[in-house]
Image 1 (cartoon, rainbow, N blue to C red):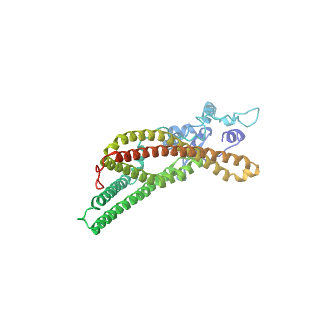
Image 2 (cartoon, rainbow, N blue to C red):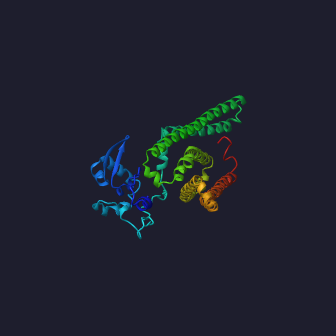
Image 3 (tube, one colour):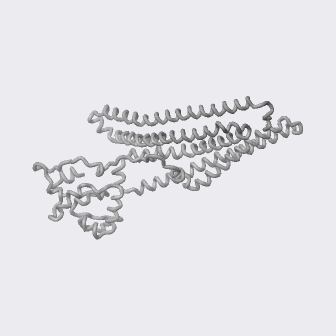
Length: 386
């Protein structure tokens, strides 16, 4: 824009139709249009001072991208009634010197990412979408009843399998009835999670489309297409598929772990001497792991955006790339971006395996200690029904 309009076309009359208000201070006269009609015609300063619609438009763009340095070059020459594009020349030519923009004024901004622990805020935002708390509560209640049914089923069988007063038919019938009830609540839990995922996904997708359609033109000028594609494809796919099922698996594992620990404490309370330290150690491992895993996944998201953006630009400019025989350079660049995107994913996988190994070691320690206590206790301390 600066090189062509203010340089090569400096001696010509330029008629420019644009939504970018960043370059409007350069021009001598501006026609402001709305609903197919010209509502005002005046220089930039007069429009900004007297027209509220134009002022609102400029202020809206300032929230997304800063006003270009072109304004600083034009302002001192406005008093003479001529624009900068008519006065700036280099060695008698009509081209202006192209300076490298500073990071604060560059058009394409670097992608930002969160750092550190964000707490429960993202999960609260997710559950607030379209009655998410209600479906999450149904999921929790259904799984708790499912666990109670499992404990009752096993307790009934253990307490009455050797009781002569209970017939075999009654024993099996009660066992099957309890099992069918637990299956119903298990099905309810699964349906609640599916509905939770669908409803929240619809709500978030609608908000995303609304934000994209209502975004100012400067947003698309300063945001690469690959970054937008990454948000609406891979990130939204994670919200659609991974988040609700990860919520269900985390909920199931947590409640199952607490219930197993409770039953184990009732049967052999001595195991608490090793279980409590293991729980404390697990919490410390969790914090240590999450601090690294979150950052790795965030880095993976930013590298994925760069890869998608480069791929889209390569496809759209394939004819030009082939014309200048630059295929090898673009292939190498794409391979480099693929490697950069795979690095954080590989490290995240390694960190997950690191955590799994240590959790399995702790689980084996608790199980071994429980078995050791049961072997050492005197015979008859526990019966199959306890």
